[in-house]
Length: 369
Image (cartoon, rainbow, N blue to C red; front, side):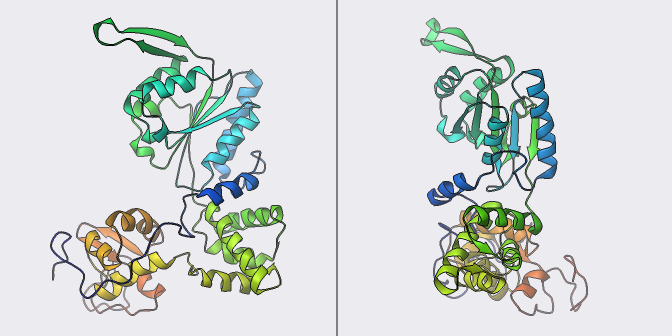
């Protein structure tokens, strides 16, 4: 049977709809996260946990700029949400003893919006531009000259009588953050003096993040409890801090307030986060792929219908982590489950499961054993 995106539907009635909004393992920050993060954020590079290579390189850039008495080079930070890009921008301002102005690409839809921000900057000030890849093209082109020559041309009037008035800007440091560095045009990328890519954290680094946050929140947590939370945090400090708060609630209500491995495990089972960090949406995608379609290949739209979600939700919310964990693969014919997915859900793959040669049960295939 051909599971084509345009012609097929999932067999049988779809499961109850799942929503991606408010996921406990989501990397985006809501109002509560932003408020808590403000209290937990490190204030200096020395306090910042993880990203050793980026911290070392950035320390050299900032130390050299201070020694010269000059503003630091423009900095571009890329990486997945929740890894610390905003925190690093604030640390850059603190290390340079300069104020910081925070805005975002979607908020700058016209060149005039950017000109108003740039013209109000003071010398040495840090301008943090989040999601810089979503800035409008006219504003982007104005930013080229501002970054390189500290000057912008303000257009006065319209039509043949329009006049360009040059406006000199004080030296400033632009810190751009993006989750999709590939969408930045080369002329903009080339104007950043320092570019850093934020990597996902390993469990040991997340344990340090959790212990630090627990200390700031005045929580009693055992090493095994921190390790249990770190292992389910999907390599992201923001998720680790969110899980820590939910485990804290459970420990206060159901236990004696001390976060042990058993308490952390029981709390995260309540919130449906398994030992690999998969939540209900992730498991629904895998279960549909394995039980309804025999491991695939299956088209994305068909898979989305099977879990009662929008295509974009499955592709942008669930898939990235499943692919990174080696549980799902994207192929030209559709989505395919790997042997690790069958093992994680405790299911036995069919004799000719994707990734295995016909009749080669138990033998290495495309994705290994």
